[in-house]
Image (cartoon, rainbow, N blue to C red; front, side, top):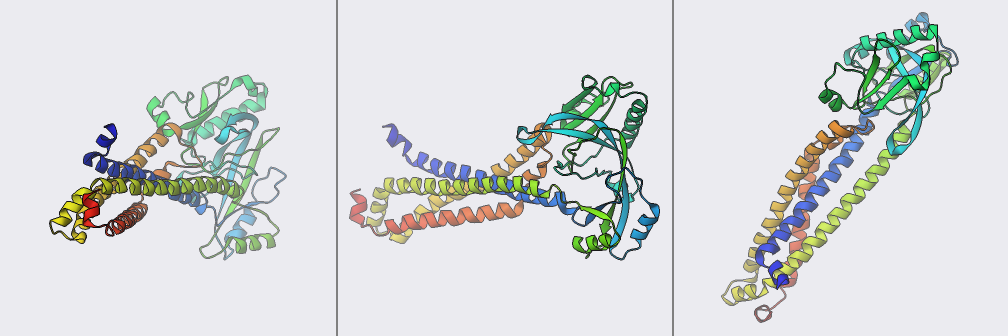
Length: 405
């Protein structure tokens, strides 16, 4: 009795709608995130592909030779030359990042960059080292950085005792060091905050992880001032051409691709998982739709036979079936796409508010009209093919077979 109730006309069409709705929403979301991952990966390296870091003497802490810098500016292959200066603070701490892997990290606090390119964007580059995590240091205020570095360095000149483990307090994902900021803003920005609880006044720096480039894995035993300059190639000049020019000047270069392979590997794995999930979702949706429509057709065979006996052609009967079932399925596709878009928007808000992993920014959940149209077309083709195979089988039956079913 319950079985017959579930196979009633209303529930049959509901199952068609529900199956297509869920399959469409999941398929669209999987494809959108997969596409967003690829776009995000490209964005991480877009601004770095034609920038080369140059170290005049990488073994020592040096200041940049202004004469050499001016000479580089005159090269036809060079667009800009700018200097990066940072204090390397002499302490490390352990923090868990992606996949629960623990890294020992040094903090870099930049106190000056001599180029208008980064003055406009308020972005700061830290020195590249092997195994770097991509984090863009974008402090709340340059003044905070300056006061923090000056305080720490003045403290170092007196004593290193305050840099003991018990006096260093670090939190991941929330801030307790900037009391002037509201709790809502701290939560929204997802701040990584480091400060010294024993040094007065309360000093700290906040790093928004949503705008990530690199936080270095690096070890130092003493405090040093570190300087490096970067060379930005002109449009049309490849990285290889720029490397050759700089090497001819006797400079040791370090391209900005230290972390690219690691991020690409992680992203490729995630993309494979998402593509597999999309394929499985599509296959299950097709099988579910095919099974339900077969049941719908079987349950309506007697009605179809009666309509044929009354003089209605097979094509007309088939058209009625297609319009009913296909219309419900298309409604499921449309509603599924709308629900998937709303789901992506909700995930983006959730990601910005609570998670905000810097390797994968919230932009991976953005609405993509191209993916929207692609998914719609694919699902429509699947529905048409499914209805065709079912109707083709039905056209071979006789009126008597349908009535006696």
